[in-house]
Amino acid sequence: MRNLLLAAALGGLLALATPVVAGTLEEVTSHGMVISLGDMDLVVVYTPDGKFTAADGQVSGTWKIDGDKLCTTSNFDPNLTCVEYPKDKKSGDSFEVTSAQGTAKIKIR
Image (tube, rainbow, N blue to C red; front, side):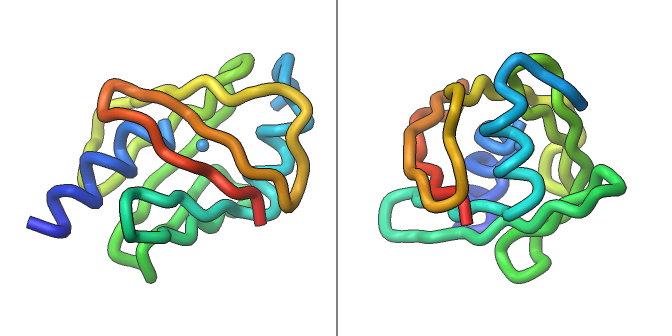
């Protein structure tokens, strides 16, 4: 059940170039982030080749930037999912993002 919750949350919220919000998404994909879902904190690590891992390697997938959105696919959700990120955030900043699966708090590492 925990893996199902994790998959749903990551699939929707990681969905995460030279976009309009290049600052935020470049910070996220170069430093990584921590997603807080209830009482769970999940570390997400991105690599320059368009791949990511999360939850100590339990989740892996691909990422790309599309304008102001981070789009991902993963081993738990092969569908491309995109989530809009706010502008002008940097390492250490926290904010919320909302997807079809709900809202989560993000902290850029």
